[in-house]
Length: 608
Image (cartoon, rainbow, N blue to C red):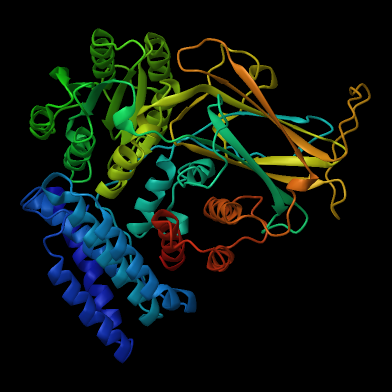
C-alpha cells in the first residue's frame, strides 16, 4: 500500500502539472486536454498490460497499474510533420493488429491489443497537436536498483594486424523490450542506464526476409554491403542468418519445467501477475505429447506440479494462477530442483527445458554472477536447456539473467506486457523452445587488399578468441527454429578517402586473396546433442556492394544507428535522433507491426 500511495502521488502531481501546461497551449491544446481527460476516464479500469481490473487484480495494485497507463498517454509531447502524416496510418495499423489477435484466456490478449491501439492512436494525435508543452517528468518512488553489465565498445581493428573477427551468435531480445519499457515510462536519453542497450539484441528483435536454409542445412545466409549512413568514409557489411520456422504442434515432445520466482520482490503487477498471464498463453499451445512441471522458489523452493500431461491446461493454470509472492529469493535452490525434475522426466530426442521467470534478484544461496555461471555450466551437461524470462521495473538484475540464459544454452527475453508474452511464447514458440543449432560461432576473414579496417557493431560480450572458433569445447550461442541473426560491420575500404591501417607486420604471412572478394563468412555449429561441429563458408565479393540496399538492410542500419545514439557511442559519427527519424521515413514499415512500433518509440524518445 505504501508503494502504491507514493507512486500515485508522484504520478498525480505529474498529471496536474501536465494539464496545467496544456491549458496555456492554445485552442488545439485545449482540445487535446479534453481528449486526454476523456481517454483517462474511459481507460480508468485498464491495468499495466491493458487487462481490466476485473480480470486481474483489485485495490492498490490495480490503481498502480492504472496510473502508469494514464501517464503513458499524457507524457507524449512535441510535434513534427512526420508524426502528423503518420497519425491516421498508425491508428489503422494498430487497430488492424488488434482485430487479428487470437482469443486468449478470458479475452486478455484481445483487451490488451485493443487498449494499446487506443493509446498509440491518441499518442499520434498528441504528436500532431501539442507543441512546446510541459515535458513528462519521470519519477519512481523507490531507488532504482537495476543491474547491467558494462559494455566495452569495440573500436576499429586493422586488417593487416588481425584479419579475423570471431564471435558467438546471439538471439536474445531482452535489451530491446526493456528499452521499450523505459521509453514508454518516460525515460530521457540521459536516464537510460549504461549497459542496458545491447545493439545486437535490438537488431535481432526483428524478423528479416533473409534467405531460407538449403536442403540439409540448418540456416540460410544473406550478405550485402552498402554505404554507411552516419559516416561518409566507411561502408556497412551485413550478415544475416535465418532458420526455418516450424509448427510447434508438429515439433518433438517437450518436457518443460516452469521455474517461477515467487519472492516478495515479485509482488508488483508487472511481475508475478503478468507472469501468470504470460504462462497461460504458453499453456494453451501445449498438447498431450508434452509434460509440464512447476517449481517455485522464495525463501525456499517447492514443487507445485510434477510431470503433468500438457493437455491438462486447467490443472496447470490453476497451479500457476494460485501462486502468491512473499519471502526472500533462494534462486539457486530452485534452479537445482528444477533441473532434477527436468532430468526425472527427460524425453530422449525431445525438447527438455527449464523456463525461469524472475526479476533476477537472487539474494539467498548462490547469488553472484560467477557462482550462478558455474552452477548453470554444470547443470547444462544434463542436456536440459535453460530459457530466462525477465519481468518488472526498478529491480531488474539483467546481468544475472543474461548470464543464466547464455550459460544454460537458452535465450533471454524481457516481458514488459502481455503483447510481448504473446510474441515470445506464442508467435515465436518454436524459436523460443526448439533449438536447431548449438554453439553457433562466426569467424569473418577480411581481405586486406580490399578492406583495411573493421569494427563489429554490438556483440561486445560475445567476442571469442581466434582459436576458439575451431575448439568444440568452447561454448557459443544457440539458435531456435525461425530465428534470425543479424550482424553489421562498419568497414574501411582501401580506396576510401580516409584509410585505416595498422603497423605493418614484418613477419606477416603472405596470403593473397582474390581481389573481387571483400571477406569470407565462416560459420561453425553443432546439431543438437552433437559434440562435433560442422563448418560452412560464404565468400562475399564486390557484387554484394549496392548503392541502394535492401529494405531489410536499410531498417537494420537505422536500428544500429539508433543504438549508437542511445549509447552515445564514440563511433556514432553524424548520427542523431533526428537523422534516425528522417531515415525511417523512407522505409515502409506498415506491414510489420513490430518495425512500425520501433518508429513510434524513436519519435517518443526524442520527445521525452
